[in-house]
Length: 127
Image 1 (cartoon, helix red, strand yellow):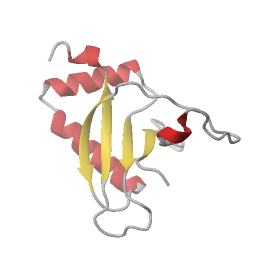
Image 2: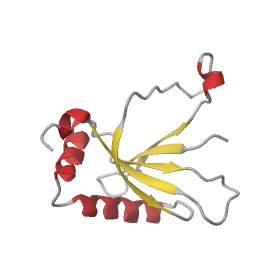
Image 3: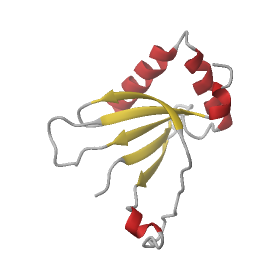
Image 4: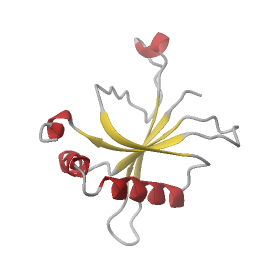
């Protein structure tokens, strides 16, 4: 298992509709030239990425994700970073937030997770 496990979350904005998740695993450098193939999987390359981040512990659940995303977004209100995140959402409306899980599923204490809200470098020019 590699870490972190990254999950991009697009919550549904309608009742009775499912949220959409994209789960990504880091491919170690030695396998990046020729990653193993599998049905239903595709390679995703990330360039430089900017994010507002909130760290939290425990096991990730649907309930904790919403709480942590709200806490991060609330902490940004009144700052220039809030507008950068809002502009990032407009540029990529498919992802409301991202969760990074660093701990093994077999670690029961001291778990490390982060909630990310992405933004572009261009949106920071006014900050």
